[in-house]
Image 1 (tube, helix red, strand yellow):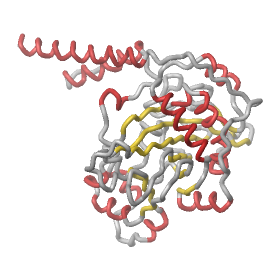
Image 2: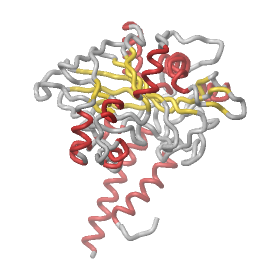
Image 3: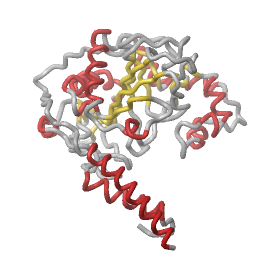
Length: 362
C-alpha cells in the first residue's frame, strides 16, 4: 500500500510539474501590441466578393471554391503576420505534438493587427451572403460573430485528419446552428503532390445512395463521434463513399475554399509522404463565423458559459453588420489567455483525480 501511494504521489508531482510549465506558458501571452479597430477604419485586405453563382453553389453543395479570394501579395502578408502571431499564442501541438499537422495555433486575430483586420473587417464581407438568414429578431438585422481562426501547416510525414466535421476544438458551439468556414491557402498546393484539402461533394454523395443504404451523412457523423479523425477505421463504407464523392483543387496562395460547418472534409497527405523534404510545407489559414444566437460548447473562454449565447464577449466579437465598440475597446486593452492559473489547476485536478481514482465523485 505504501509503495502504491509512493508511485501515485510521484505521478502527481510529475504531472503537477508539467502542468506548472503549461500554466506559465498559458499565462504569459505577450500583450505589447495594440490592436485598434473601429467602424471608421478600413482593412488593408480587400478580398474578392462571392458572385451570385458561387453563393448558390455554396447553398446547394455546402462548399464553394473561391479562386483569388486574396491577392498573392495579401496571402503572403497574412502568412508572415500569422507566423509571427503563432509564436505569441499557446499551442497544444507545441507541447504534445500531433500526427496530423504541425504548428497548429488558434485565435491569431487576438495578437496581430493585420490578422485582426482581416478577420474582423475584411472577411466578414465575404461571409455575409452565406449568413443572410442570421437575423436578430429584435432588430431584424443580419448579425454574426467571429468564432475562431487558426493557422497550421502540413509537412511530409503528417497524416492529416480523416473525413470529419469539425469538432469542439475547431467549432466550439452547440450543434443547433451552422456557419461558414473560410480556408485560405498560403502556399501553392497541387493535387498531384498532396498536402491540401479534400471536401465532400454532397450532391454526388446523396445521389449515389440507394434506398436501402445505411451509409448516410448522419450515420457517418455518428461513426466518428468519439474519434474525429478515424473515419477509415470506424466506417470503411463511409470512407469509401466519400472518397468517390470528393472535390480537390490546385490552389495558389490566396485561393480559398468556403464550406458549411456540417460539410465533411479531410486533410490530404503528401503523395510521396515517406520522402524527406524540408521544403514541402503547405500552410493554411482558416476562420469560422457563427450566426446570431449561437450557444457555447464546452471549450470556450469563460466569459461565455457552456450553453450560453455568445453575446457581449470580446473573445467572440460581433463583426457584422458593424463592430461592437465595447468589444473592440477590450481588444485594444489586450485579451487574456483563454486558460489561466486560477482555472486550469482546478480543472486539471479534477481530471487527475478521476484518472487515479475512477470511482471517486468530483
